[in-house]
Length: 480
Ligand code: ARG
Image (tube, rainbow, N blue to C red; front, side, top):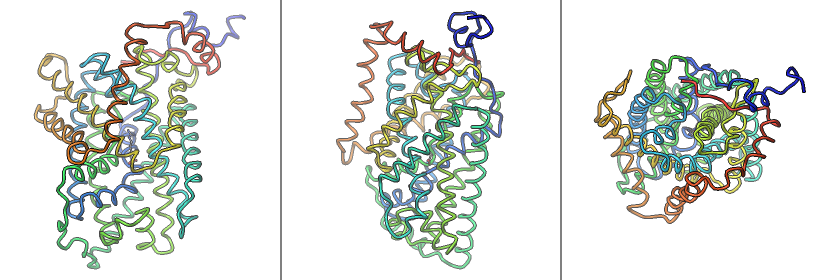
């Protein structure tokens, strides 16, 4: 083969060409859309009734939504400090690796790759499919098989876009964010009109019936926090951010308070249009709201909710592929997952891997259980990550920080996170949470032989070389 017709992947492979690196493509607007556009997805159209069912009263449910927003704001301030001290991409994984060591980091990446990320992709795609199909099944429930097929199609399309072009994936993110902010604004304006007309029954005696059990409060929070999840999204892509020291804290301080306000007002609007009972019984709140307030235009809300979920799916893919990619770079995942396409510079192997597992999780999964197990596992790891921040603040105050959060904030968030992780176990322990916990720690069984003792070192080599040529990918370098 002559030098000219050699595939660039081969050149990088045999050391005749330098390593590739991902580009810094994400500016402030992109960053805000990456956070807000991932946060606003399925939850605000699916979870309000589950929050209400668990907490028992409209007043209680608004308090839960506000408290979840506060937790997301405080959590993201802590992550902003982490992101400016540890400048690598990879979110919780890289922070745990640098503060608590490789075993815990591996446990995180193992659960994250095999369950947490695919579960979030599957959960969001289910909501996308439910809403996309809702206009065609006004009077009867959608067949589950069809819902899952449409969800799978949504996952595959998003994966393809993300494999092809970072810039296009980013533009899509901005477009969908604008679309969903508009959709939520329509709901809010509709709510204001209803309130002005005096439709305020849901708010009379609004705390009557509030459920104060630890378990229902915890589950209500899990459902609310699902809607806010994505607040930490930028920390997965720090290396692709333009001016991360400035843009990271700035983007979260714009995006998260904005989303919190939108969510609160949308919930008020749902309650203005429906009685709490109607809200609890509705199968898709945005459709019920649309039918009541917009009449024959009600279907518009289903389309808006489907688009919203699709945008969030895109953001989840964008950052999810990156985590896998960073872990592979650190030797905690097969090498092939750390490579990027030689021309497009997208981490396509990691994206393809996430897609495959997400499709598997989709087969047995249903929205509500996916969300509860997701939130349990996610908050378990957020707690460990924030403890790492406390460690850095106390033991390494000399590290350069462009942004520093007052120490009481991580302490408060850690206390709330411990409550959240314990809540479904304390009051009324469900055996599934034990299985999830066992699963989380089963990562150690893979870590000890394959990572620590490096058993079977050449196992994946041939497959890696084959896939590398087939997918035209090459190792990518850090970009810090
Ligand atoms: N908040 C999103 C929604 O309501 C879910 C985000 C899942 N998590 C994530 N990191 N992408 O659909």
